[in-house]
Image (cartoon, rainbow, N blue to C red; front, side, top):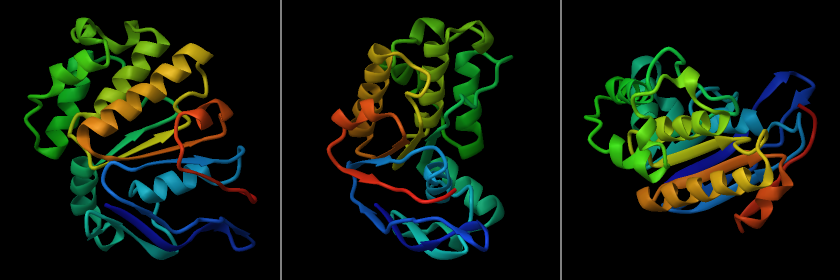
Length: 210
């Protein structure tokens, strides 16, 4: 489902990232551990089609991600990749429901699964609430719901537990795993949070300068 090989990237000539080759099948999960500045978010952005590598290829379901460009890349990403950013990328003036419908609109999906998704995440009762009225935990669940709104084949999560206490951190990882299993999707979590290690067996640790 996801293959990344021979990836090279650097922001400066003398500042290269150590980006391992990856091969993950449908439903497989991977935890990428590393300290701040190790390149975790850079890897996630490359795998998510947000940052083109200087060299190498990323394939998702047989499609070369960076063989696409412009609108074609945007549409493919919207249909196949769900990204949960460290800080929720949801629109505060809109309701929970409207945020999901916006994600559906850009990918051409009908949104029929939105209510089930919100129910699974325990926030169906908040579907008419404005995002700026939600708690931090609720907003994070909306961010997860929006990332999953189009039934992605690949789910990428950037530091999803960084600002959470132990109980909520465990709950968020559990939710991500459950939803990935439901969609039979690849799940990749990048984090420096050692608490996540106990939840995902398949792990790699990266280092080096950022």
